[in-house]
Image (cartoon, rainbow, N blue to C red; front, side):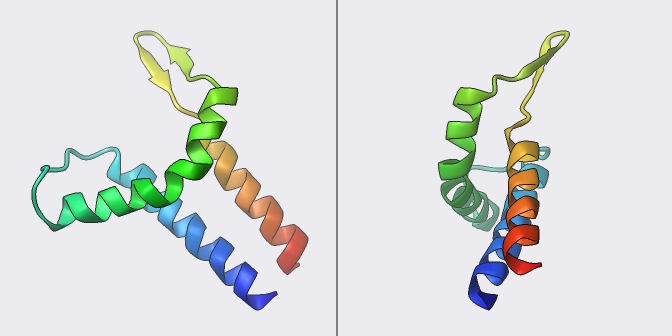
Amino acid sequence: MVIICTLLTLYFWVLLLRVISSWFPISPQGTASTVVGFLYVVTDPVLVPLRRILPPVRMGAVGLDLSPLVAFFGIVFLQRLICG
């Protein structure tokens, strides 16, 4: 049980890092690109299906992706359910 709780917490932070990294331009070369690539590989299996279900919310000419928010709520729900 402790392992699952730890993994959920770790995934929460990885997802948060992905969201934050999406706000900044990343050079295609270098360590930052490798780290961001890893974040995308780890989080895409959860976010891509959510994006299929939940399209971006249009705010003028910009689309707001709500899939990370739904994933955050899902992680917190699972943490409360499993970890107490």
